Image (cartoon, rainbow, N blue to C red; front, top):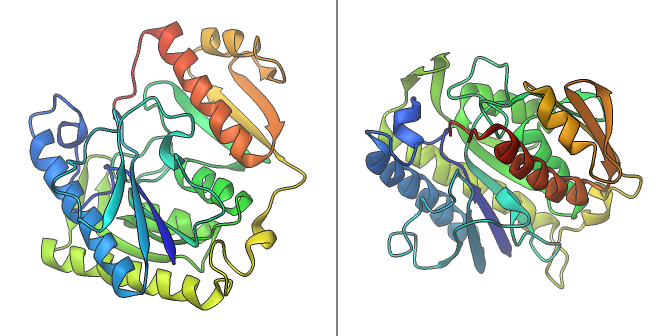
Amino acid sequence: MRVYISADMEGVTGLVDAEDVQLRGRDYERGREMMIEDVNAAVRGALAAGAAHVLVNDAHSSMRNLLADRVHPAAVLVRGMPKPMGMLQDLDGDFDAVLCVGFHSRAGTLGVLSHSYMGHEIEDMWLDDRPVGEIGFAHATAAALGVPVVMLSGDDAACAEMAAWDDTVVTAPVKYALDRFAARLRPVAEARKAIEEAAAEGVSRAAALARPAGGGGADAGAGADPGGMTLAVRWQSSSVASHLVGIPGVTSRDARTVEVSGPAPQLFRLFGVFMRVASSVTGQHPYC
């Protein structure tokens, strides 16, 4: 069993504010410690369920949050940026399962630290006209690569968002949103146990479906995306949209909304280019 972990930060145990997750935030150093422990809980769960290889991709902000000497020694760490595939760097069809640790709900929802990739710039996103954020986009891309998402940890809003996309995914709520920057927290030990157990359950389910030869699930083709999808992104700034339509294949729906069609992995990679253009045009970086 080969297991892939994408690790974000806003949905990590105990974290509720931008000061917890921003590089220069007052509580960032403590926040990254919490992130490391959530990730290690997921790694332990995956190993307990029979994973022979675990890759962890640091997927938050600078993507340099996880400390190499603190991540579980059985895991391979992907760290730093830029990465062509960002939050899903190095994911391919040779993996049997994806675990999403520390994820958050999409822009516009009342979830802890909710946003979609760029908190200051992205107002909404759609895949085939279905509202989407980081959870749905990761799920669709992994499915197109033939790898099932089997587990997610985050707040209750993130867990509900994943369930709406795929109710077979095992979720571990580590906090319950009271507002965008406030939550009722599960006790830390209890939350970590929930992550470890959810990871083990998700990987066990994937193992039951894995091909005897290994690599990809037995139903890997079922998640494939031969016809492609349409991604639409509504920006707060019309300047961003006006620059993006200079990219071949990108068209405008209105002054602030652009769309492009293609296979989900191609769209995921192209969206990374969108964000770099947006940062350059506006001079603004994501709040998280």
